[in-house]
Image (cartoon, rainbow, N blue to C red; front, side, top):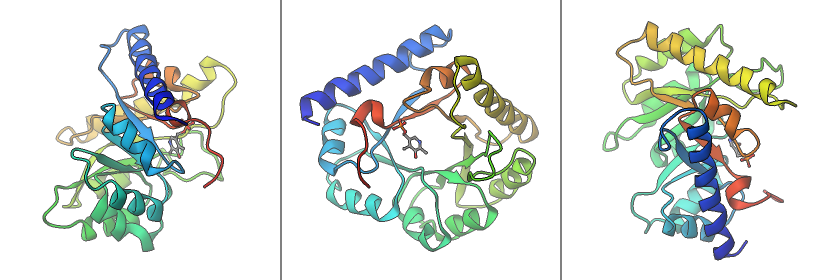
Length: 234
Ligand SMILES: *Cc1c(COP(=O)(O)O)cnc(C)c1O
């Protein structure tokens, strides 16, 4: 992908997000765009940053660290870790990322809180929910979500911001919306239960289902392919 193509696809992604928001009867700036750059070179992230993009999502710890080192000169860049997280990698993420979207177990949360450096603000957390109840998928079940949220809210170096999900593929627009609606309801349940908590984030919607997610209240959409093109390798 060339610089010019990236600028165009980023502008198109922003326009697509605003249009989806307006179509949903929401303000055109009511949700943010997270540029998911996994497997893509640091040079493309730099281009996106020059075009005004600030928040980037990565899935693999070593790849994240390598890109951060290469892009350390870019002020204001915000790194979101959105991939599966093993306990032996929590320290790198706690030290080097601003957000983690994939917390689905108390043990991982505890390590992130313990390992978050004192000189950085709290780590912003979304709990990943297995919203389509797939046996093979990561994510906490809706049943276990309130207990995990309560535990995370008590952890001093974490700030619980909301929920993330990757629904099972769906054929129709209505089928796409159903799991996002469940995630929205789940967040509402937590907001009622924990009114003091800063629960303002619904991380949902990717290149194939952004409109459905925005219609159900997404506040942070995670777009990879739509911005950076198809992924071929890891
Ligand atoms: C890869 C990935 C995305 C982006 O997916 P696209 O379909 O390329 O937009 C979003 N969220 C997560 C958790 C991912 O792993």
